[in-house]
Length: 504
Ligand code: UN1
Image (cartoon, protein in one colour):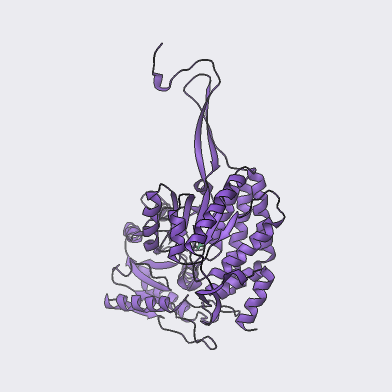
């Protein structure tokens, strides 16, 4: 079946009605073939401000619904995602160009966070605190924060919304979603499933979850609006640097998930078979378009030549092609700009003295002439030059050598970004060092697995130019609530803290 027919059938089964979105502001292409699959209109700034107003109204009602009941709505959403996993995953593959298994995996990540959030809805715990005053009790109370604006990127077009929305909803917050201009269809599909989940859920107000479409002008309305309590934004460091100060200027809250430049250290004691498999998935999987993709390989000099050879051989045999076909492991880049950026980065690396060991060239795929297919590249570098310290959103793996593990850790840390990292080693002292205070400075530091492909149970995000936000598991839910500290006096005295005396 051709992509457009397949797409129409999928959108039909997911209950997506594009009538209200017909227009020509967003020309949506599938990276699989480059062909146009939809032409939609953008939300106007006035409409977007209207969405915030309606979300604010929804907040006033939703915050009163008991959290476990709010969890029940997320449970229903999770059930619909399970039911429609095949179709929604395929839509992700069509719109973002992921191989089928990764498209399905992304929907699984949504299901997982829904399950997590349902449990969390009964665990919005505050603490009780020992008061220094007799007859007093202190406690923390967590209250819903307000409207949450979620700005997402093309590369995880639906999972990142789910990390935010599933938690925001159980925390009592309505959500407004601005997806990437490149992936509006997946957002509208999720919106359709949410509407189905909420349809006969009597306690939910109107407009609990809304989608706005468009580019920066639409995002800016959310960013600047005083009634948006939290902006959760995923994208480039440049975007985060623009958003952060604007939200701070109105004393709003930000959760930023920005660029990464993730490294793996391969020690002499590493299981090299395991390492090569981890490297290939992390560097070439998703065509190098995860924020957690492996970009820098820091290998002990004694095994550098062998690792470079084995990784290059593995890259050379990767099946590159139409991501919708079984057997393909590397699909297209999102667009031509990404392919141009990859080519430019490789040129720069070469002029810095880098040697391309494999890949880097454009690949022509039969029946997909308009797609931007590339061969994942391994580039051996003499030093960590500026291009190595820059995130290029494409499958380029730079290799660097080291002789002392402390130097390897310094190399890993010596980039502006701080998202993810890993070490492959059989030496427990090295492993512990890597995750210790003087080890990796990233938000994610792994041992004997690659830097990508995190589960939702842990807090996800990174330090430095990655923005500092944490999403998904652990106690990330706290970002979606406000904390009150309460001191309750149940005595008939009025002792003051710190022993202060005031009057009689
Ligand atoms: C992203 O690329 O924006 O850890 C998110 C991972 C995925 C999420 C990546 N679970 O690779």
